[in-house]
Length: 316
Image (cartoon, rainbow, N blue to C red; front, side, top):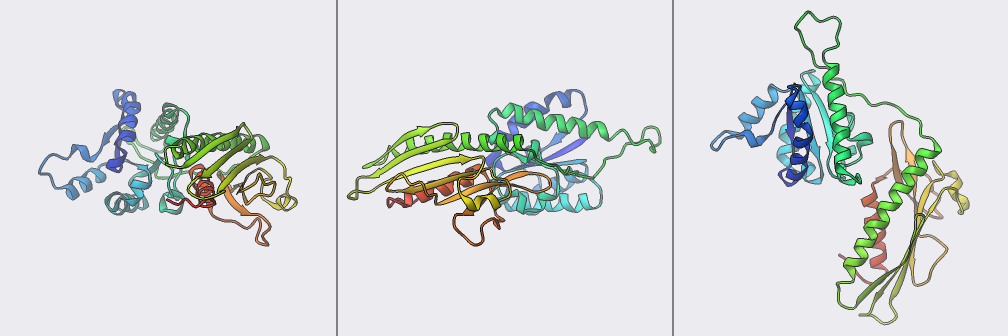
């Protein structure tokens, strides 16, 4: 099988790692790959890309914010691949390299890799993420030779991209909560260290545990201006209204001058028929439980971080 790899040049590191993991499939002559690196100097880019796509069975897209922002990747390569997929000429395989808004693009119609569409950069070990990608590709390739109605020597490529419906139990939700909170805590720790390089700004972590994070931030450029950030996880609600949410598993936070027990807002685990994800739920709102916007770990961290900095007069 021949694969066309579509990627942003800002994501060369992900392309390099993907090629390393594809090496054995290539040695077994199960797959060959094409990228725009094969276009020679003086070559006509549009023609070369079109010709390469026409001869491919698989379209792999390394998705990231840079990919979605790239007019060429998204509007030229992907649009043509989408037309071919609709004519059952190839299979589109999204590979999520970095967290991005891919669920609100036409890529959301296709099963994404790695597992559950979790971005490669968010795995604790990127090699494990790529191994999951390779295992799925190997299964896909093996499935192309199993059509009993083919004549000897014929070969076909399925253009179906499957999404499997799931139910999520309490253990899966707890694991999802704990994994998210650990990543959040680690990101916030890095951010706090970065803040301490600013003049007259001092931040200190007071607590960092598996289910709680607390830190204090002081802006010495203003008199008596300090703010405490407090984050906690909940596996069952201490807030009466939270019993009406989708899961009862959430992350709540507050910012302010004192260590408040009242939270500014909370993020709740939600799910559709295929994935677990996060939704922001405002506290004490009549629309509680009606949130529809999905949040990633980075989205949550950015939201909390922005609120905390604003509380003492810092913006970026």
